[in-house]
Length: 118
Image (cartoon, rainbow, N blue to C red; front, side, top):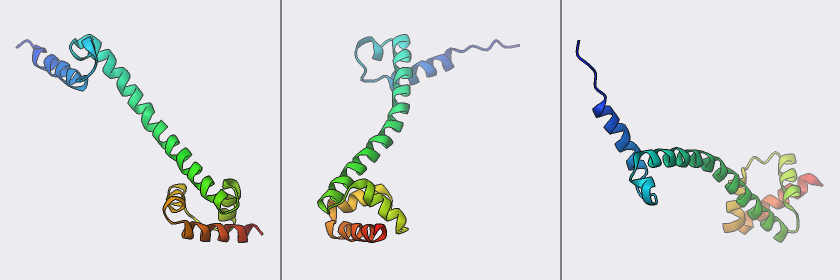
């Protein structure tokens, strides 16, 4: 029976890790062990970062909506509550975009929300 040698697969595995570590500082981009550790840590950071990105965008949208709402004479929480009462289904991303680019349409939504609250 032929003996199975791992040389080709081991080299492929190392090459893959070193390719992922390209651009890292010092030994982390040259030596397999250091590169492997850093790549694992980088992948973990990337995974967490994808979750953080969603949080950060939602915070940004809420800040923009609040700024637009205050220009129109109300607050973020009152606006969102009024839109829910009026059964207006619009997400925060679209609402923030309206607050930034189309203040007239945003003002119309504020008026609808305030009418539903009254």
